[in-house]
Length: 175
Image 1 (cartoon, rainbow, N blue to C red):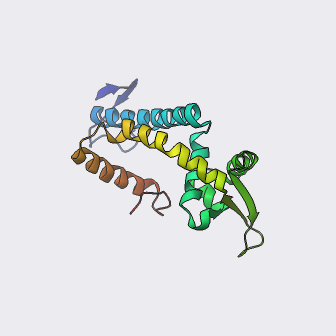
Image 2 (spheres, rainbow, N blue to C red):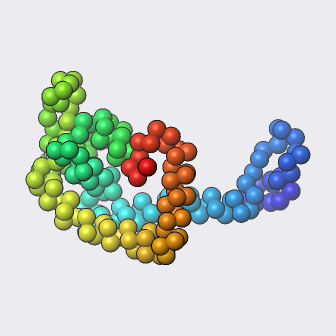
Image 3 (cartoon, rainbow, N blue to C red):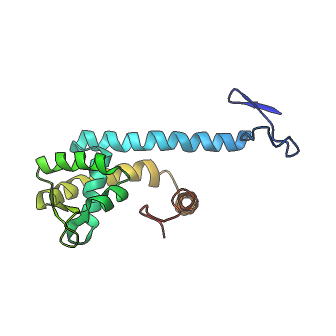
């Protein structure tokens, strides 16, 4: 039995089935580091985008996903999925982006019930203007601290975990 994080834990495989299975110290250390990264990295990306471009990270993801789509157009439902947000949240963000002239909504020609989001030329210009600062931040926080072998290993490890939480492979970067 060991005491970790305020909870008495048992790493004994012979413990009764009703006993909680806690993380051992190494597992807990790894989990807490990952949890910290999942909290701090998005906040750092968001801060850079707010400071340099007046965008939230979610705003940038919406613009970025549209910039990569054929004809810079996606159905709102697909865009919500790609940007990892609800349709309701996306609708509010797209409304704001429309007001800035970066996105427009139009009926989907294939399905009159659906609405497409389209990146405007001004929106494309905003992505082109914003991307270098965002890429520099990603490099400084994620890429540059790792040597090439570590980066490749990190990519493999993240891919393994991503496949567990997104078995459908909806997130970008899954092979």
